[in-house]
Structure formats: C-alpha cells, structure tokens
Image (cartoon, rainbow, N blue to C red; front, top):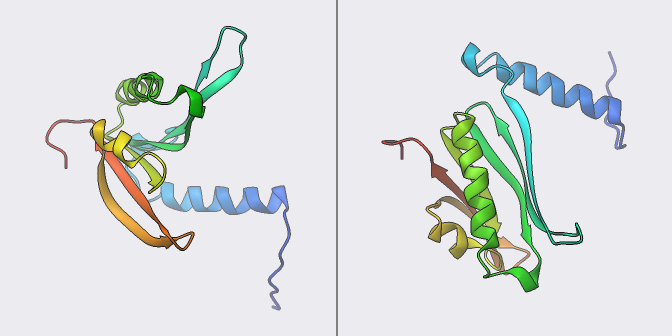
Length: 145
C-alpha cells in the first residue's frame, strides 16, 4: 500500500476525520453521555434586529464549551456580556453540564471571566509574539474543582 499526504479542503474527507474521531472518543465515554452534542448560540440584537454580540458554543458530553464570545466595542462594560454569559451558564446547568470551558487572549477578556467565577487552568506564552493565551473553566456542580 502506498499512502500520500495531500493538502486540500474537502468537506467529505473532513467529515470522515471528524466522524471517525468522534466514534473513537465515544467508545471511551460512559454510555449515558453518548449523543450529547448540541450547538448553543445566543445573540444580542438591537431594536432593528442587528446583531451587536453573541456567544457561539456547544454542549459536548458533560461540558459546555464557548468557542466565540463577542460584544461590539461600543456595547462593552454595559452589562450585556454578563447577561449573555449568565444565560449560557443557565443553559449549561439545564443540560446537566459539569463545567464550562473557554479560552481568551491577554488583550481580550481575562478579567471579565475571572470576575464571573472562571479559573485559569492553563496558559500559552508568546502568542502573536507578545500575548498570552488563557484557558479557563467554571465548575457548575458543588464540590468540583
């Protein structure tokens, strides 16, 4: 057999890789967590229906992961970010998640997350040559650390 490495964007091949890894991972999790995947997207819209911010996240097995959280710059520090975060946390609790995980860069929202009870569990230095990448989580169930 001869194998070759190719570099191309191919939806069918990408889907194969994602599904094969998911199937492998699923075999290592308890059966009751199987099939627990759901996108959770919240949007902050003004009176005209224009998106001014939002959270793009997903429930995966026993956690919720925030992938993207953005508030328009002129809306920051107005409390809407905290309201969005509280809403996604409420959804995570309703979905029986044990924790929420998120990452942020040193020039983004580290203080915001810490103020809302998230704890840093890892960092990467030299991101963009001058920044830090922070990985945070918030436990949603009592007694977990």
